[in-house]
Image (cartoon, rainbow, N blue to C red; front, top):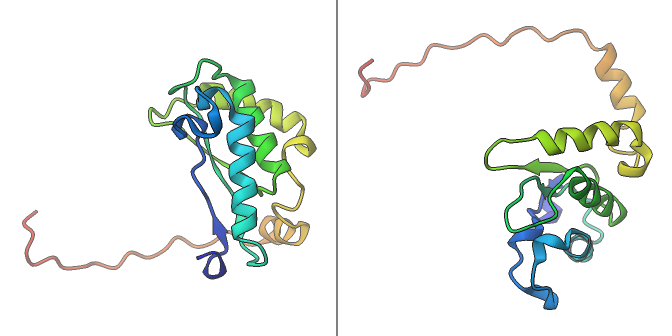
Length: 147
């Protein structure tokens, strides 16, 4: 699969590992589960050129340690193990703790990001590109639907 994709985003939420590696409460061991998962994904996608951008846990399910620091730990470990960026998931769309964590990320960007997420050339061309025109919508008939 990796050789056919630009980016793979494995969902490696620590709380979803049930008793693996002899750890009774996986949700309270984000360093271990994010680190091990990223190492395994790096191994199986080796030489494919795919970017690994993991989904990380942004909720308190099955963890007693959920906090902004919990988010920062996952982001840092994912980066250290080869992740390029990250995605955060919370089923309730409650991103208060992740938001607090992201303010710390902004102040310590080099700790949490590799620096090659967006090349300077891409960033510069995006900033200098003219604004895109809004797309024209095409009317589509739906004969089997009554509105």
